[in-house]
Length: 338
Image (cartoon, rainbow, N blue to C red; front, side, top):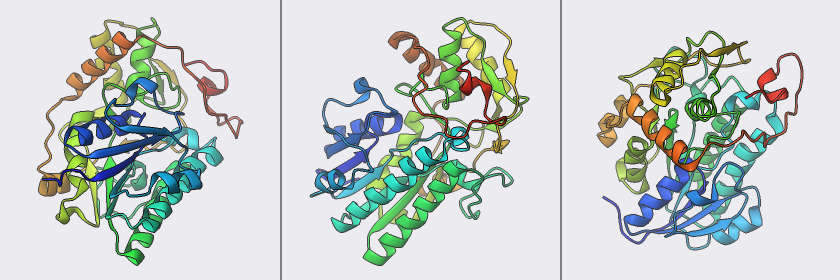
């Protein structure tokens, strides 16, 4: 499938997706360099068999230095806080859009062969689901806008400079190594971390929002071939199961059953701009990547639970400042209730 001994840069290598991806690419025989600013990752996530540098993607000079000799870039780093972006748009935009432009610019200057960008299902906005890749992006919040803008810059620079590109669109990845002490994102991990502390899950709105969740191994099965398969050049590909769409209420029920903590959810008012139904079609991934779901949602939650239980519960860390604090800002964040 892949040429051995490619020199690969993975951004967000201490994070959830980036750490797993770095590890698997290294196991396949590639030379992997990982960078991360450590805002959204854990030190013990970093694979032992990669070269790691603590670098912020917005530090263009350092990015240029680490990019030397790189063949392929996987840009996974992001401040992936869609809901929070409505209230911290500067920080979210800086860490997504400007960081992406920094990575893409340095990569193009180094004449890399291919850039794989990890975008987000947020690109589709509130269109009818399931989402298909041929839908025109309709972002509804600053996070989604930053992702779509990053996609546009990537395509613009790569087309001009004859560099291959692939855009991956994962849908709600879950599994071990996901940051579970972040109060602003990762609904499954938040629920489990709360339940293991004897606290009820918090749900925004009525809990009837629908989502699809992809276990990390199933996501990697699509991400790894993006390294160099020719047919994937200039493709945008959803990654996520389309046979199992669930409500947030159902997610809370599954987490309760698995943790054994049976407390009724605490319902809070809707978060502004939240997309109610965000599910994807996996037809393109099946066609191009032979994608299939091997881990069910229940199994994925179980594996996530075992990871958090083993690593130990943690208090939630409010590590990103709220920039817009008004009547619309969730009290769970302003009063640190999670």
